[in-house]
Every structure is written in structure tokens, then in C-alpha cells.
Image 1 (cartoon, rainbow, N blue to C red):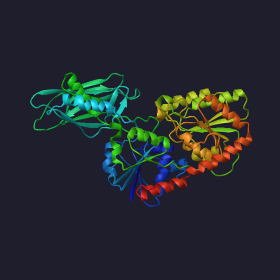
Image 2 (cartoon, one colour):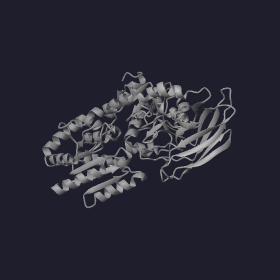
Image 3 (cartoon, rainbow, N blue to C red):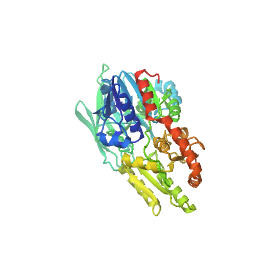
Image 4 (cartoon, rainbow, N blue to C red):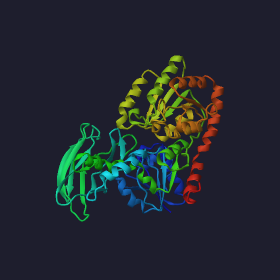
Length: 513
């Protein structure tokens, strides 16, 4: 079969990309596999760093606009979407969506939808007014100010308006463009002629743009084109979308009734979940993810744990604590908490743990350089070593040397309020266990599925617990050896071989994996 594996974030070379690459590698033994990416990727470097062999696959550049993925994926028998937080719809004969963690369904709650249908619907219904989304819009998102949709460089809204007299159409944009990005010039066009223009960005105030239009009668619609400058977010997750301006309302006419009508297309939709219905099967990377898929998307899914390749070679354990993960400021979401880890290590040094070192491995994008600087400053005077953008060979060497492995994602975070900030699985933890390091991790979400407390490692809930458990393991070589042996056995359950078998069965047997 002709199979497409889509990932928007190949260049970040993280756990999601390891999953996508291993899946493509497994399927390439039987099928013609294409790697879809909206950005250029150094494939040899990716293979070396992630321990993959993609020689049987074919890379393919695709447009960044998610609205264009449907016609492209129609060329394939199977689309496997392995892109984190992706909202691309499936156009292939069969679609499989791999969920690292689901997006929240935006839009109104079920109660608000019922109220809207029973109360607002009859009030707002007008035979001579209508609106339909055209091309160029990204799926809707929710913020503290409500639901909105990002435009691309060119987005189209189709309007049906009263014939004969001019009607005011007001578009409201939110000023969500990053401050580092210059304000966008926004043009409204009809039939190739500019009707209005404004600037969006630079402050936090919403921007209203008005245009007077006359309906065409007979059910004819007006194509209102929104043109704007675009930027690429680059928010640490390799988001390669070209974003224009965030549209929050399209108001036709004046008054409260018109305002409600302008919000209804946003509030009545299920923006973040619209694409899900185009996929026949959903795959979750952990039971934790599966629970939230069921809760937020109302879809069941099968669990296929990520594949883990283990470091081979000598087994010379050193007084070395290792932690692997991108440096990502917690203000922007999913942080690996390196700042807290350094503070815990300082506590250990103060308590008299001689000879041990802390090694932090991970990438860091420019947006998070300030966070990395804060971690370095916190580590000043301590035996803490940083390995930024380390090659795969260096990482595997550190795995073989480490006696203890730390993972603190989710520390101090509420699963109920912010489940997306917890570790969805934790490939690096399994890699460390396979190499013989004893895992001491935050006992939540995916980490709790991997590490069995007091069997092959420890769960902790605070920095104090992390320091105490680390002292216990570091000062008792016998305990460390028993836990390390059990950790290796546990890691074997997440091998690349088992993963490949499950993936091939899923695709070849139509979902009977």
C-alpha cells in the first residue's frame, strides 16, 4: 500500500518524532512509505540522533496550511498522523491518528449548545443572512477571551446578505500575535478590490474592521477575502503553521442580535474535534492519553506504547544522575522542570552526597534560551553538566554510565486542570531503565505506567521526596543493583521489536493489533 506518515515537528527530534520514525521504519518493510513534513528536515541527523533507519522511506514536503492536507492525503491508501496537537483532516482511504495527548474540544459546552439551539437559534434565524467558512482558516482554538480561528495568508468567508441596501459587516480580531512579530497588515477584499484595511498586533486590544456590503439576492453569496502577513510560531513544539491573524467574530448588522449571530459560528462548532471524525482509528501512546481521548473526544482508542531502543555496550555504573528532555519554560506548557531538578541536586550536595554529578541533556530553541540561562545560573558552583543538542552517540554513552535517572515533568501540576503538562509517556525514562539506571520519577500519568513503585524504581510527588529517595539509592549499592536489574526487565516490555509487530498488525490486518 501507499502509506503517508505525517509529522509537523520532525525537526524537533523529540519523542513524538521517534514514534513516527519507528512506525515509518516498521511499515516500510511491506509498503511504500512517505514521510510528510511542512518544513525541511536534516534526515541523516534525525536518524543518527533518534536511532532510526529510514532508508526505505521517501521524504515529501507538504504545504503548512492544514486545509491543504486533505487533497494531498487523498493520494494515499493509509494516512498515519503522528503530529502532536495536529488538526489535519484525513483524506486517505483509511486514516489512523496517533495521539500523544489530545487537544481540548474548543467551542461551547454541551449545555451552552443546547441553550443556543433552543433559545438563540429561533431569535437569530434570518433567511436573508448566512455565513460559511471558506479556505484558509486553521481549526478553532479557545483562549481566555473565547473561541477564535487563525487565518492563513489568505482566508475566505462566504456571506449571504440582504439585497438592495448596504449592510455593515464587522470583523473582530484578537491581538494575539507575539510581541516579537511586527503587527500584521490586514486587507478585506471583495471581487479583487480592497474594501478596508487595518493593523493587528502590538498591543492586547481587539481590533474591529468594518466594511459596507450589499447583498446579491437570489441566494447569491459574497466571497470576503481576508489577507494578512503571516508568521511561524516556533513555540518549542516545532509548530510550522503560517499564521495570519486570529478572527473572533463576524458581525452582520448592528445591535445585540447581530453580535450574537456573529459569535454563533464560533461557539456552536466543535473546532478542535472536527477533524477526528475523518479518522477510522485512534491510537493512544499510553493509558493516560487514552483516558483523556475518551473524555475529550468521546472516542475509544487502542494503546500502542512508544518504541524504545536501548543503549548497548559496557555496564560501568558511575555516580551520575541523568535527566533528558528539552529545556522548555513552564510558562509555555510542558516543562521537564530542570530548574527544580538543579535545586533538588543542591539539596543533595548540601546533605553530603559526595562524588555524584548531575547531567542534563536536551535541546533548546531560541524562545527558551532565557529559561536555559536561569537553569545554568541555578547550577553555578555545582557539579552539573549541560549537554545541549547532544548527538545520539553522546546520549547513549550517558545512559550506559548513569546510576540514577530523574524525570520531573508534571511536578506540582494538577492533572484535573492541566493534564497536558504531565508526561504523556516518557521514552527517555524507558531508555534509561533499559540501560540499567534506576528511575526516580514524578508518579503521575505515563510515568506511573512505566515505573512500578518500589519494584523497579520510585514514584515521588515533591522535591523533598526526590532528594530522599535519591540518597537512599545512592548510598545503598545492593538496593541500586536490584532495582537496576528489575528496571531492565521492565524496559524490555517496550522494545522496538514489540512496537513494530503491533504497528504492522494494525495496518496490515485492518486494526486487529
